Image: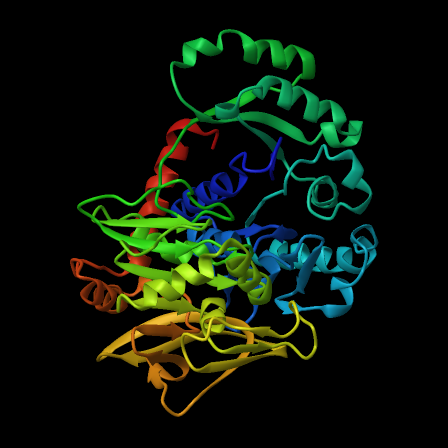
Length: 457
C-alpha cells in the first residue's frame, strides 16, 4: 500500500509504476483505491464509472479495469457537495448524507471490493488518499489506515521532497498514527528528488533512529506523458509560431486528460483560459466537459468570458464543445430535478437544448467516422435535442454542428489519429496525429524501468 504525507505526493504514479513493473515480471496484479475524489473519470467496458487514475493503473497492470478497483468515487459538483458514485453508479441517497456518516454505508462496499481483488489476483497494489494523518477525518476513514489494517498491508509512506520539509512530513505523519498502524509501515519513500543525492547527508539515518523505519527509495523527479489524476497545467501563454488553442478552464471542468494528445505535441500550444481576455488571436477554442454546466456557465458570464467567446465566433474559426461544453454552447440547459444548478440560458451559439436527466449515460462508444474507427466514452446526465437547421456531427445524437461551432458528447476524441488530423486540418496545423493508446503503453514501460532502477522492488 502506498500512502502519502500530502495530496500530490506522487502516490498514483508510484502505484502505476509498481503495477506495470510487476505485470512485466509475470505477476497477476491489480490496483485498488477504496475512495477517490476527482472529476477525471473513466468508463469500464460494462458502462460503469471509476477514477481515471485507477483505470490507468489497471492498464499498467495489464488487467481489465473494473469497479472493484475503485468502489467509491466522489465527483465535486459544488463548493460543499460531491456526487457519490458507488460501484460505478451514482448513489443519490449517499450523496445527500453528511460526510462523516458515510462510513457505515460505504465500508462494506470497500471490504467486498478488496476481497474480490484479493481472490482474483496474486498481488494488489493499494493507493491511499491525501494523508493518513488527517486527525479530523480519521473517524470516517475508508481509504487509508482502515484499508491497511483490513488486509494487513505492507505500507510505504511517500513524501514529495520537491516541496521541502520531507523529513518533518514523514516523521510527523508516522507520529500521528496509532501503534498498530505504525507497525505496518515498512519503508519511507522520497519522491520527486532533483539534485545531488549527497545533499541528503545522514538525514535518512536520523529518521530511521527516530522511527525504526528505513528510507527505501529516493525517486527522481520524473517527466512523463501519462494522464494526471486531477491537476492541469496553468500559466502558459499565446506563443508565436505555433497553433494556439484556447481551452476554457471554468470551475468543475472535467476529464481534462483527454487533451494530452494536444499538450504534448511540439507544434501545438494549448492555453488554459480562466479569466477575461481577448481570444481573437487564437486558432481555435475548446469548451471541455463540466461536472456542473450551470455553475461553469455562470462563471463565464461573471468573468466576461461569455462575451469573448461570442466575439471569437465572429472570426469564423473553429469552436469545439465537448459534453458539458456542448451544453453550455447551446440555447438552454433545463434542470427540472435540480441535479446541477437549476435552469440556465446558454450561450446560444448553436441551436441545441439540453435537459439534465436523472439517469446518467455512461458507456464506451465506438463509431465509424471518415472511414475510420473512432473510440471514446460518454459520461453525461444531459439529453440534448437540436433544431432542424443544426447538422449532425460524427454521429446522429452524439454531436452537432452549426456554422463554425462543433459539439460532441464523445470524450477522448483527440486520442484517435483520424479526429486529431481532422481537427488540425480545420485550424491550419500539421496532420501529424497518432493513436494515443500505444503511446501510453510505451510510457508505462518507461515508468516501470525508472522504478526498477530507483525503487525497492
